[in-house]
Image 1: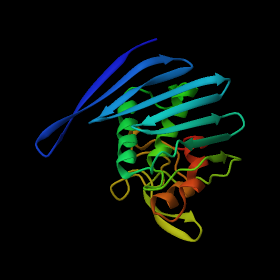
Image 2 (image 1 turned 60 degrees about the vertical axis):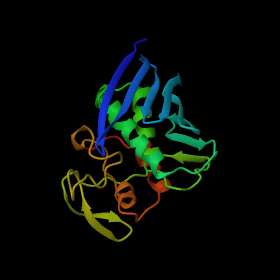
Image 3 (image 1 turned 135 degrees about the horizontal axis):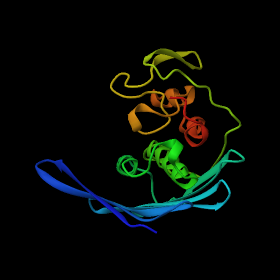
Image 4 (image 1 turned 90 degrees about the horizontal axis):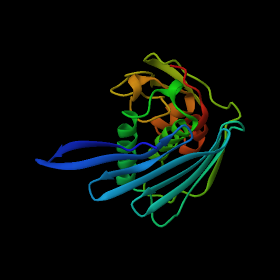
Length: 217
């Protein structure tokens, strides 16, 4: 067990708001901790309960998520407590948590299964539809993703659409199944994630890409 504290000062409107990440447990099979963003505390936990099967728990203030990911079967599920709608602030807090953890958790090839599932799940929840209840959903990989190029260019992203996509394209990384351009733009770039980024496809359609697609960049 290892305890790790990172404190970040975020400046806004002339005032300093403290955000703090605490990783209380980090072993080859489990990671858990908290992230304080202003007055809201986020709690996260991921544990490999059997080979390649990860159970996850997230609390974003008074909103709770549970999830399970089976990397062997390529299946996963997620559900919320449905105490309230998932708001834009909730999404922003999940994005902030993702970036804070990215400074602690290594790139994909060096992650444990629990760490990989945690980062993938956070990035998926971070882009969930705003101001909606998130119902219980089950995802299946079935190798259903279609990769696109990592190089910024106008690309075919499926369903008859062409859009700019790739690393550091149009001020971001459209098409990457993740948050922002973390890890220097490395990640999985797929058609479904690109359609989601351009509001041309659903969160559900891109969910298996977020959870299971190996990096192609």
